[in-house]
Image (cartoon, rainbow, N blue to C red):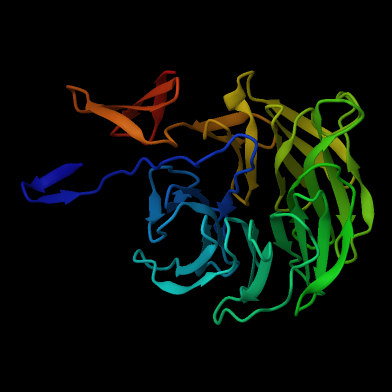
Length: 379
């Protein structure tokens, strides 16, 4: 902060909280329609962070309970954000006041994922409801646009086919992938390619294929990952992604938590609890690059985003790693995703020291006030 006079202050920089993470569960990362922003949740807030300057931050704070997921509409005019009480709030992105368009309680439990149709008129939300696990509705009126029934346990992921004929796909804790046709959307069929929870389902940009990934325990091995490709309209199985170096011929040696298609639709990035991110050739179903992040539990990769401007992976520690097309980690955004317990300004007034504490883990960071970089100094 700097002061023009004793009564007026100007905001110079915001060092945003990092995404809140939970061990064993995926964290959803969203993107702006042009790929220049990363969108994620922490506490009761939604954070919109610039890809190139992580101190260029916008924060939405109107949820009364912890937020869980946020997605921007393809038009770029609205964001739909969900929370732990089953509420979906739809708010304007063109003004800093973020005027509320509508708010709906879609079910009684936590919202795990949200998807927009390509025309920005429909929203699908899935999660942990009691009477239902998913709902699809018109964003401006809240009118139901179909019925997302057919899976027997909480739904973890949902996505719209971006081209006609429209389809919806979802992944569930009942180990299935479901496909719905519409609108209005109705259950078509389920696929039983996974033997453990399905964490993520995603269409490629042209809607010709979709992929699913989950934690599959096979033949006495430890938890192993399968990534399955399906035809986009009817869901016929196309194949699987397999890393020959992984015992049992799976894609990873740990549970997958994130999957993202490249903007061109030719590649897939997967993030796993085995502490790696892998980049695959979707057409050849072959591994191109494997990026290892370390040996600590906090190095597990639990989310991934691939926009037109960046490939970003999220670790269990909450750190955001930027990866180039050659598999090099070019930048890591470090910081806090838990409450900060202490803060101190250096005598030269160029550095801030902050620390958080959770259980036996203490982290301390130094922040350069003049430049948008900060460095981990103690862990």
